[in-house]
Length: 296
Image (cartoon, rainbow, N blue to C red; front, side, top):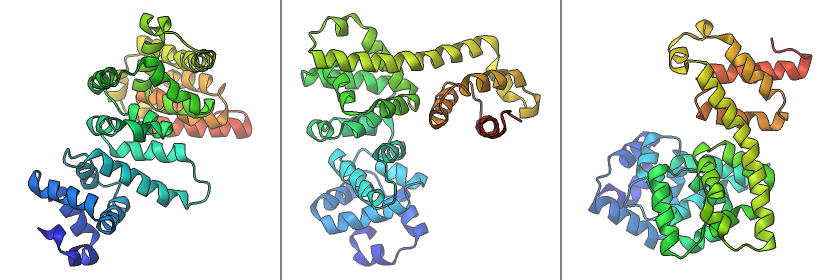
């Protein structure tokens, strides 16, 4: 096995490493590598160094999402990257977790979330991993909560440690998480649970944020009813109905400048901003409006 040869890690080129991460056989070979990484911290850091450098590559993502890579090893990698980014100027943990969550699929995110104690120590990471869950894994997560005798109130309580702008940013960047939180908040079971004064305060704050985002959800629904977005997307940008983007600009200009990019992510995630061309056009128009008072 090549990974057991120390000279391989010292001398391999980036392309050789990518090839290794992409081609390593599933089963015993990969499991053996993962176990050795847990046992040998120096070797583990060496592998992490390469994984971090190549984190944008598909081969790296495939490796990190293999079921043979244990959740506690993935947690170590997450904080390895955290340490790297922490040394940079103007480090922001929320922005880091927004980036790191993109390396993990829904199933792997659920496996990391199963590390109860570790997750409880870092609510920001926990929320970002929750935002990775698809409907199927959300159901599995609810089952996990029940197994640990945790209530929905416990889940909602993790937001109490975050600032309002952080919560808003996370939810705008994950409409699936937003949807499930809204579902929890309106459920009869949740409203009947006994809550303390602090829990009620946190719930009111979260409800306020969800209500504000619901305005954008309604806006998206109205655009979908008014326009055939599938047909629009099939057209060249200059053939699309320009009034649709005018409606988007009319609403976005009311939003504070620092929040617009997150709202735009939400609109794109909901399919009313059709592609990168429209996203760039909207951002450019908003920039012009801020400078000279007109879009174009």
